[in-house]
Image 1 (cartoon, one colour):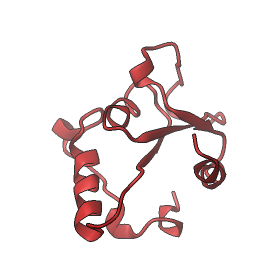
Image 2 (cartoon, rainbow, N blue to C red):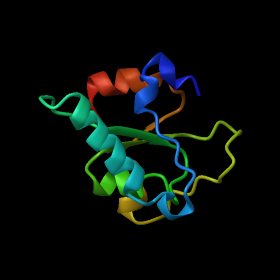
Image 3 (tube, one colour):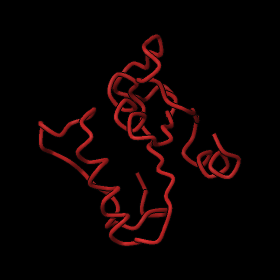
Image 4 (tube, helix red, strand yellow):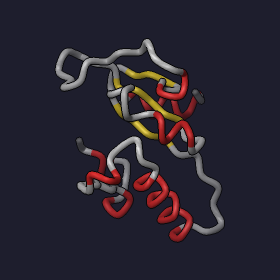
Length: 108
C-alpha cells in the first residue's frame, strides 16, 4: 500500500488473530496506546482509511476517529454498500489515496 511514505513502520499494525478482526476495537486501542506511549504530551486526531462499510468504520467511529472510505475504482474485493446505520458509515470519502492529505488539511 505504500504507507511507509507517510507512516513509520512501527505505527502499522497487521492483525491476524480472528478474535480481533474488525470491527473489534483491539487493534485501534493498541495503536492509540502506542501513540500515547511514543508521544505522551501530544493530542491526536486519528484517521482510519478503509473500503468496506460492513466492517471497516464501526470501531473507529465508536472511538471518535475520522473514518475515510476509499471509494471503489472497480478493483475492490468487497461491494461497497452505503445503505446502513450511520455508525457503519465513514465520516469522509476519497477516490485516491493522495486526496487524504488535502482533506486532512481542510478538515472532514
